[in-house]
Length: 222
Image (cartoon, rainbow, N blue to C red; front, side, top):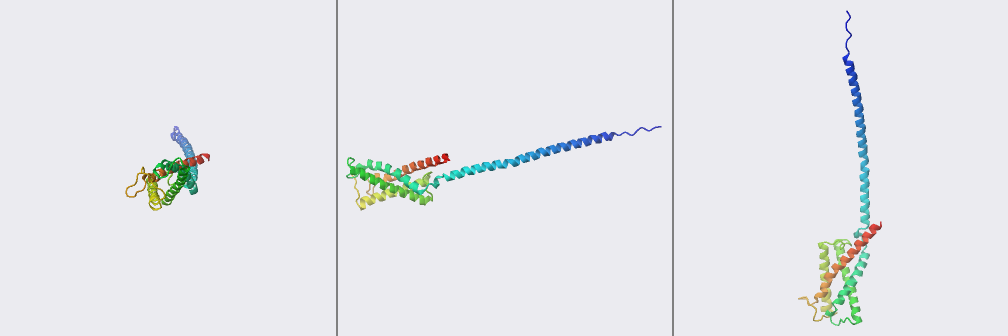
């Protein structure tokens, strides 16, 4: 009696398992390859950010070159004087009737007001220098805050009082008419003192706008 041949059910199962393992290995290799590709793609992204950082740093360097804080002191002196003289000249002419002997019809009156406006420009210089030494920068008036306005107002007020008191009470440089309002206790004119409080604010604002326009134009030119 012949015995039946032994069944080999496990061979096909083993072969199938081997095929499955080989397929899984290929899938894992494919996943690893894709993962490595993604990592390589991520590795290439930092240079882009570094490039953008370089662009930002370059832009900042350009801004630093045109920063108003780098405005030359000589340029500030010239700009302030050029703006201060005409503003003060018109004020001097407008308040002429408050001073004795100031007749608008005489050439000497126009000349006297012009010389006075030159002196007023020097007083604006003094305010600028005080702010320069107080804040350690020449552009302290370009973007003013409370403390910057305080320097303009306090120094301008002090200069106006001192100049008027010396000119009227000590050396009799000029005299007032009856229309001039006086400051109680000091017996000096109120209008010229107000001049050194109000006009410096206007003058510094005009020069600040000039500097901003000059800075923007030079930045756009680059």
